[in-house]
Amino acid sequence: MSKTAKINFEKIDLPQSDTVVLFATKSAKLSALAKELDDKNNKFITNAIKIAGFKGNKSSILEILSPADQKFDRLIIVGTGDTKQLTTPDWRHIGGNLSAHLTKSKIETATLICDEILGDDDDGEITANLAHGLVLRQYRFKKYQTKSNKEDEPTTLNPKKITIQSENHTTVKKLYTSQIVPLQHGVFAARDLVNEPSNILGPNEYAKRIKDLKSLGLEIEILTDKELKANNMNALLGVGEGSRQGSYLAIMKWNGAPAKSKEKPLAIVGKGVTFDTGGISIKGSAGMEDMKGDMGGSATVVGLMQTLALRKAKVDVVGVVGLVENMPDGQATRPGDILTSMSGQTIEVINTDAEGRLVLADALWYTQEKFNPKFMINLATLTGAIMVALGKEYAGLFSNSDELSEMLDASGKNTGEGVWRMPLGEPGSAYDKLINSTFADMKNTGGRWGGAITAAQFLQRYVNKTPWAHLDVAGVAMASNKSPINQSWGSGYGVDLLNNWIAENFE
Image (cartoon, rainbow, N blue to C red; front, top):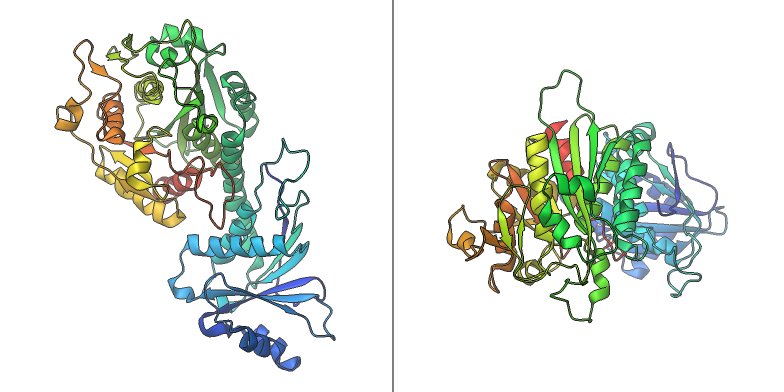
């Protein structure tokens, strides 16, 4: 896990050293403690607010040097705006922006006083999410840098220590350690995987790292080429034919449901193409380096399974990822080849760069046949077309279940990891007919128009009646937009979304 500040939790007691952080709502309204401090020191806070024109707007920051008779170095006032309007993502963003300010100011230790000005926080969620945002912003992937190449991103960590003070500090600490820290581990694990170069994280190494997760209490099974062939997973194997590395299907099981539970497991499936050259239908060289992140969907699954294990989630969940490398070679699958998938359905490969859906075809079929899940969700950096439609703000959501779609939409709003539902035709619909083939049961592309939709139509042929959702995360899992809680190339998108979906609906 990326090195981050040590977080301590204490009862409110104005510190006598280092940096103190207080909060102000709209119109720069201060807490009782801040007013008392202001009154005892010749209105130094009020005067600074007036001079700076500070309004207490959300994530605005005012830094004030402390009066001569105070032992703390400086006072930072953080604006929240109207606290009644703030959501969980808003509080995290406030924490992330504060983190950025502390880092830029090279502040090593700070105390946040989270008092009544933040609003009703009896359950500790506001304070815990402030801390969460602060830590998420600190993530850096610098393992291959021998020295910093940016002046504003020092190699030394700042701040190193954060103290969170609140009246219900024991409640906040319990929530933070039991729920937030496991989530951070999962998000950072997903970011790390996406950020790794492909010469390090090929399918072989990826499979080894997943094996190591047994130490968390996960049941791990890795299907190698031999087992994949025995299961007739020729679609998945076809993608990896041109690589020197093996192809794998990795299965991670978390058995957390009560012993007497008769509920079916939840299943999460991920595309793990560790590098995608496009195969024989090779991509252009411009931007091809980004294809190290074409395993972003699988990274989310791996990060999520770690989170569930670390927080001892009371639910049964199966994570399945197909691990392959798509390379051109004398043995590589060619355009025009016909592959027989595990389902028995045949696929004419029109374009070897439409490879992710081939990996998922066998992974989805295996999962729904083997585990009979209550709901099944797959994540994949599947199409550039989804970015044409949605940019980098949302993941595209395709589903055969209104119930599942509504749950995922709610979790997207809860976490700030948004999804946007896209059209999906019934079998035999106009969209579905676009992938019909003259020579096989289907072809792996549907042409230029509606590319993200026809990719989803292809996947739908491998889920039968299982309630299922496909999340196309091409725009949000890698080379994602920077945000107050993530400055990394790999975002870790989806870990929070799916963890919330599970916690809110199945525990």
